[in-house]
Length: 476
Image (cartoon, rainbow, N blue to C red; front, side, top):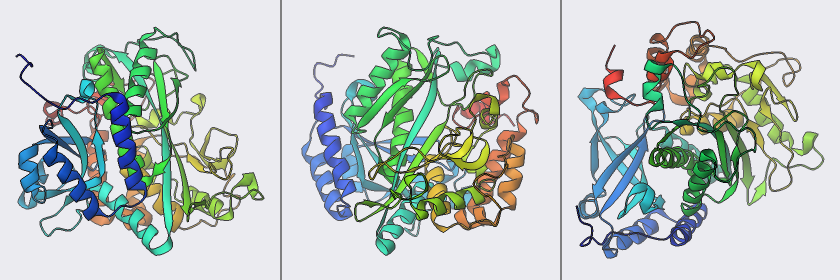
């Protein structure tokens, strides 16, 4: 079909970056919701070249959902965007299926037309129930409420940045085809930091980094990782909800870039046995009045007493929360000590086998790094769990807590048992949402052999929660 008569919005990457950085600063400065709503609606009304608004939200497992609303419809109905919650895994039952989306105007993005299509903008939505209250199964809303409460009551700003590793495989449907082939094909045989400018992996990383930059990610560095065809594209710190949103956008845009190039960007934690798996190292800190509360030049490893208490609470609940940080059958292959696996429930400045690491830092960058997180975990669940546990959890009376020889579960069944038996996870999410999440994880586990063995099974990929295929999921 000819495009000569169309006049849809297409902005340069420089223009996109300028707009997205301005929106990011508004978010950082806590500009009032009403002010942002008025500004965004005015923009949408006046910008004739926008045809649709893509609204994003995530289900209980962290799978990203996208709804395109016609712009003219949205301008008249932005306060009453309904959808069927019973169709979303882990959300409501059919008898109570009516849910709504409240647009989070602070989380508004201008997107590259060559990646997401022309004439579109994106905004994250908050799921609310028919009474107009935040829906308890929307973990983005849970995280946002927690962060806002800490800021309002204690003046605390929760900061996070995630280092998300993934693999680039040949073919656009490599994960869906795995059950037939039982193998993934690398697109590049290089290793850590090593790739030539023309290599497929380097081209993919460069393109993805350009998209991130345009969307206001404020990149830091990018590189191939240790395993063949493995990558990591790092970006700057942000407030906790924005950081979680960027994880979702990171995975969305890299998958789209890979698809455009004829590849699959995979976030399975351990898709190939015998090489390093992929993690989502979660760097966190807390600030107050612009001052990093984790920094203390005279403290142990130059972090503060409050930072060590934060660490101790996470270590105390390490087994309780393992299922939330390692959310799939495949994730437990990664917790293998032979490949720098962070499976030891301890903290260290140097030992990368520790669940928590204290990186070298300064007044600006002092932080805690939770290394045991899989890249397929729900980012909102991860960051809420880490901050809620680190700030409000209890500290176990274990001798030498930070050095004790304790280990995370090595299979999802053990993680499920610990999660279900834990009083802390009930406090985190409430009994109803806690059990809904457990049931989803149990269903995944029951489709796979109980023993992991030495070969990645077709079922652990085929029924992975991020390899979305409605037909496959209905086969049980």
